[in-house]
Image (cartoon, rainbow, N blue to C red; front, side, top):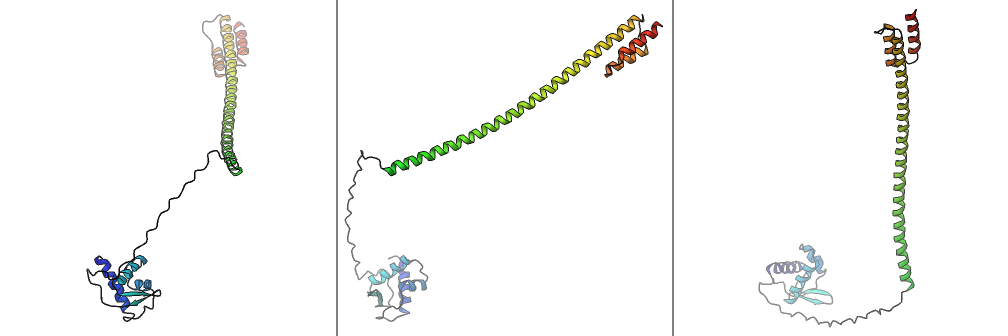
Length: 221
């Protein structure tokens, strides 16, 4: 017995001696005495009781304990009551019965396998549906982007045709003005022709031909 166990056993014995006299039965359970001296673990209390029983400080009688001697246990004191030997129990070897390998599957096994397969198929279907929704969303976005690109292409084509028409009209007006100036036999253009050319360059395509004809008629007069 080490010093700590010796001190616990003597503290347990002193608490019992404070309650009863030698030869009297303890009126409370050992666990209550253990809590009184601050021992909360039942295993520690059981070891203290066993040490007191082995050194004839206590005696077990009809499930209760009688105080025989209140003298504290001395260091190195040997046990007076030998501990009962535990009977060795023979361990029986369990015979393992191997299941036959050619056993036919039962209905429960078939049903369990079918349910597992249905669960797997359900998961695959859910995955495929999610992929389909994602693909449809991507296709819709691609169609919208294509429609927007086609709309912008049409607008640009119309703008190009409009600019080409205006350029052709401006070129025709300039040719008309230059031809009118050459027909008048002048090396330099007058203010009217210059104003008409400036109007053509700024985008006024309607009147230059009439102005050139009027200018040409005035020059001839």
